[in-house]
Amino acid sequence: MKVILTRNVDNLGKEGEVKEVADGFARNFLFPKKMAEPATDAAIKNAEDKTKKKAESAKLELEEAQKLAEQLEGRELYVKVKETEGKLFGSVNEKTIAKTFKDEGIEINSENIKLLEPIKEMGEYDAQISLNHGLEANIRIILVGEEKTK
Image (cartoon, rainbow, N blue to C red):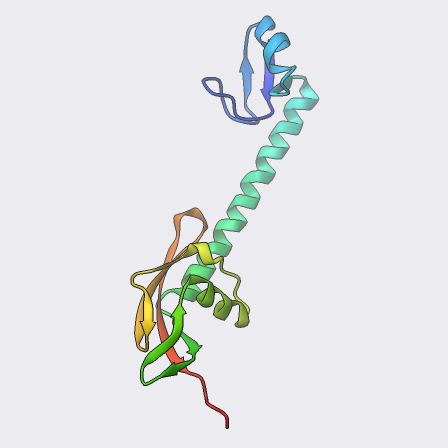
């Protein structure tokens, strides 16, 4: 019996693939668990359309990630911090950097930011940003003291 997999099945195939399986395996295992559906002409066409749409959206997502990586690569990010004589009040972490990017209109998840060393005093530091599709961008973080108002 020909079936279309509705999700990835170990040792059988990936979602959207058309596979030939034993009738009993399809009726007793795949269909009840909604892992597959019968491979009718309409269902095959529908699965092909879904696969095309997924490929197109993955391509667009890759292009957006590449643009963002190009935009970020080698960039200097100025982070305002409270400090006295070169020592920080607290520390600068991934969340602080993500918030600074957000203030500039760039959405980056703090979990994607990797600091090469902890930031506890004024200076310049390197960081790496991991993006979708295995892309990475290296940035330079420059700490700037906040203006003190009296």
